[in-house]
Amino acid sequence: MTISMTRFMFFALVVCSFAGNKMASAQCVGDMQGLMEQCARYVQKSGPMIQPSTGCCDVVKSVDLPCVCSHITTAVEGVISMEKAAFISQACGKPLARGTHCGSYVVQGN
Image (cartoon, rainbow, N blue to C red):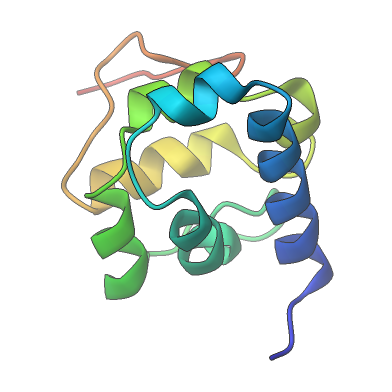
């Protein structure tokens, strides 16, 4: 299985941020590995916002997104776009509430 450098970096940074905070990984419900594997390409900083795949949306619907957002580090924000992450959650039918902090990004709209 080939994994792109961006996906690897995303995966590594998110795993490290959760591994460094065992409380966070224990608190956030859902398939974190699936989230990283299925959705990484949709939240890359480069490129346009694109509609997520069904696989990405299936995982997004099973994850406690506000919990994940509350544990995003600046290192993770260096690799992924929080604005795209909020777009993906909305596109998948599970929008983040207006005012939710996802790392340093504050969700607008809704």
